[in-house]
Length: 276
Image (cartoon, rainbow, N blue to C red):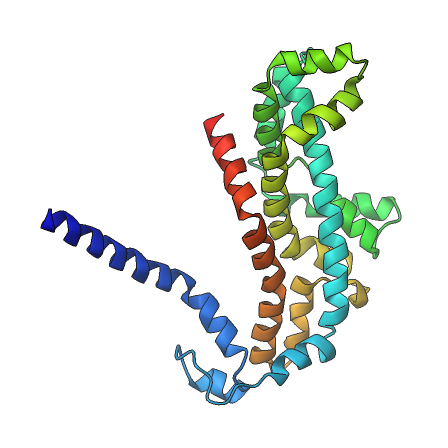
């Protein structure tokens, strides 16, 4: 009994230390944002600032244009998350509920796309967006980021819809509901945990997306997102490290808030996907 209790205490201490090591880079980044550049370069891994420099956040917000980049990022992220949820839910519904010729082939192609690195699609996307006349516009960046097969989300929706009893769908048909009405009024509300999981994961990925926003807004710096705007802290011969850490803290704050408020739905969605 005693040895079992000691083992639990040891396990808790071990996991606590491991957790502290895991989150230490984040703590170090937040506290470093309150240092001077000189203190940042000389203090090593010592995280506590001698005299907190709150003006670093004002400099990041105003001088580095993070106020404009923040608005661009909100519009960009919310639009992409909405489009991805609608597209993936419709695709997952079709693959999970509707029987049609070539269904397995399409599913195979969707899964195979998972193994194509995203960086390889930048050039075709850039050319397509340019041909559509959408380059150097926020709408063009949104379309480019929303494109492609979001395989994980499609599979999650497909497996969830495949497990829904046929009686629900048949009852909707008896009430006169067509394909789209059945989907939007009956099926989609049932998939709330999958929607929440998709929203959280896509929100995190899109909020921190760097490559596509960088390439597609190269000649219009005012359209940059927060991740791309971090370049403003790096000059030809100097770098504003504490401004960069302040900017990174501002960028991460919305992601953390979204995850904290929606973590219950995220866990339910992941658990449901794993069971299926």
